[in-house]
Image 1: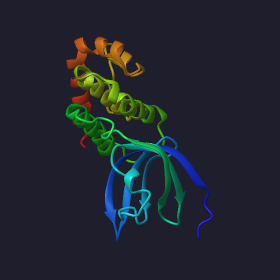
Image 2: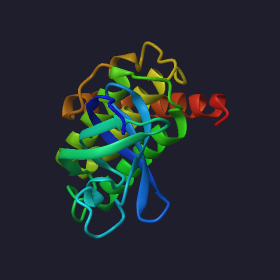
Image 3: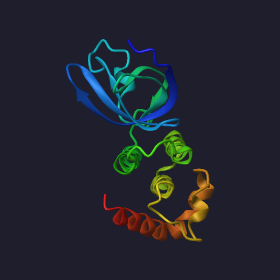
Amino acid sequence: MSNAPERLLRGIVIGRRPAGDGSVRVALYTDGLGLVHALAKSAREERSKLRAHLVEGTKGLFSLVRGASVWRVTGVVGSENVYFALPGRGSAKESAARVIGVVRQFVRGEGSDPYLFSSLWEYLGALPDFSDENIELAECTAVLKILSALGYVRADRGIERFLDAPYGPQAFTAMAPVRARVVAAINEGIAASGL
């Protein structure tokens, strides 16, 4: 039995796959450790209290314990799944899936990055409040922030102001005229990454 201390971390489930009989391995992007792959024993079984909390798009406070060779999820509180918070809003759900996919594709366990974490956390938290007209602009802002934090996008003078701008109508109104430049910068960064 491990006497490792329990870590309570804000996290977002960015991926999940089966692991053995009834268990699940989740990819969590956390505020304190960055990307963590953790095992949740018996979490696919119906009786599991963790089952509903370990679905892609869920954010909350995760209790993790470091075992001999793997992190283990031992509890979750205050969780909310972004997809469930968007009933009937297909374009918003697709946007959330694409942004989570960017994190899954480009983050390789570089360690904790508070800016990247808060960019993703705030985007997912605010997404239910965005109007349908602002979904694409919010997604562009989130991906720009994430790829910039990872060093894949170098923001020029025309778009650097969006890196620290909060998600909201004022930022989206300012982004609309330069959206093509933002998308071009994002696409160049993705192409240059080779991933």
